[in-house]
Structure formats: C-alpha cells, structure tokens
Image (cartoon, rainbow, N blue to C red; front, side):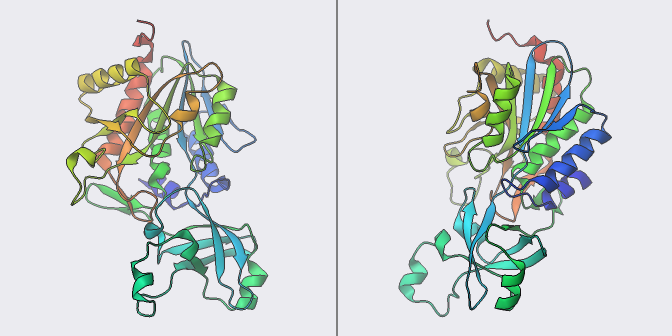
Length: 344
C-alpha cells in the first residue's frame, strides 16, 4: 500500500496535479513502460503497443479544494474559491495546506463558532461563502507569503485499517492505483493499449475530453470511485453500491450510459474468474467515461468503480476487497478484450 499512500497524500488540486503526475511517471518507469508522455493539459499518457482495438483506460489525478481569491487586509484570513464539487459540511473545521510559492502553510477551514451565532444562523444550511481559511499567522506574514490564486487542499494521512482504507483524494487516486497495479500484472493485453492519468476531472472531465480526441479509442474504460451510501437511515435501494461487495460495474450516471455488450462481458468475466462485483447506477455525478464516449467518432465505454463512503472529504473510506476486485477485473478484461463482439 505504499504506492496508494504516496498517491493519496500527494496534493493535486484540479489544474495543479504536478506532484501526482511525478509519482505516476515514476511508477510507470518502474514497471517497465517506456512510452510515456505528458500532454499540454497535464495528462500522463502511457502506451503499451499491441494488436487489435485501440483501448484507453483512464483514472483522474486531481482532487477538490480551493483557490485563494482574497486576503483580508487587517486579519490575514483567506477567502476562497471552490474548485470541484462537494458538500460544504464535509470540509468544515478541516486541516488544510496552502501551497504558496514561498513554502507550504498548514492551516484550517474556519466557520463562526456555534456558541456565538444566533439560533437562526445555526439552523441555516452551511454554504461555501461561509468558509474562510485560517493560517494562524499574523496578517503581515500572510500577505508576504500568500498570493491570490494559490491552491489549497486538505491535509491528511492515509489510514489502513482492518480491511478498510481511509484518507483524502481516494477519489480518484485509488483508481490511479488500480490502473497501475493492473498494468503491472497484466499478461499479453489483447489490444493496442493506452493508460491516461487524467487532469481536471473534477471541473468538467477536461483531461479526458482532450485525451479522447487525441487518441480516438475504440473502447474506453474509466476507473473511478462511486457512492457507497449503505449508511444508517438510507434505504437499501438508494445505496448505489455497498462497501465490501466488490467492484462496481457502471450502468449509468449523469454523463453516460455505458455499453451494454461490454457490461455483459464484464459480468460474465467476473463470474468466471470468481471476482466479486455489483451493478452501479449513479443518479448524480459522472466520470471520464462521459467525455470519452463522445470523443471524435465516439467510443464504446465502460466504467469500473470502487465503492466509496464520504466522497470529497478528508476521511473517504474504501474497502481493500473492492480495490483488489477492481484490479483483478481490469487486468482480466485487458487479457480477454479481443473476445468482445460489439457488432453482434
């Protein structure tokens, strides 16, 4: 799990993914993939030449967070611009890192304390405009070190528990991890294979859109996370997926309908190989598959997702069984992809 720890703990706000990019390139070199480049947007593109269909697998490197949009003159508190989606409740009272050109500053998100606000304000839903970031430094020090536009991300270490994994940016560093492990283990992939570690997914699938147009895949598979809302008080039919029940085979989300023939093939392959799996229909959100499906002449797309609780928070929670199932199914899929009959 050292690779996943380094991926999770690295900081990579959308548009600022360089640290994650470096880890991915080093790992691709370690496992012997030499044809690697980075495009103008920042996508890391690795090519494993082969015969057959052109296949692209993707996982995104970026995470949600903030940009500094203003520095209060007298206090030094930072006002922020949100980058990516999420729930403001998930990032209240959270330790953050301000990535300044003059050195990183550990800070925290702040909101007004509950014991001094009015009852009416306490009942009002938390909004992003309520947030500020507190470095704890004197105003003059903040103004000398921080600039408008500096990225801010959550500060969190990865915790590996008894079967579970918890930390920040598992959306979607865990997908990057799964792709790298599958590439390391795959034997004789039956396709002309590209792996793309994409950028700026959280702000509109931008990296995947650019990569899809450049690579023109016949088949594309996005490896991401999905909601595991198997929580107290939520009906089982609304859970989307269940933690520990295996890799999620995506049928639909807000951005795509995946290819039914590929889905049937994935289900049959998982059953044949004894890989635990579950279906996924995600009512909100999307993945790189939505952009890849519409690139150039269009591609047949699929999605393999790791169930995740508490997405876009510093304590995202996944299960190691689901991660391993994702690696195993992706690896087997690449070894048998020539058996799919899309025209039949």
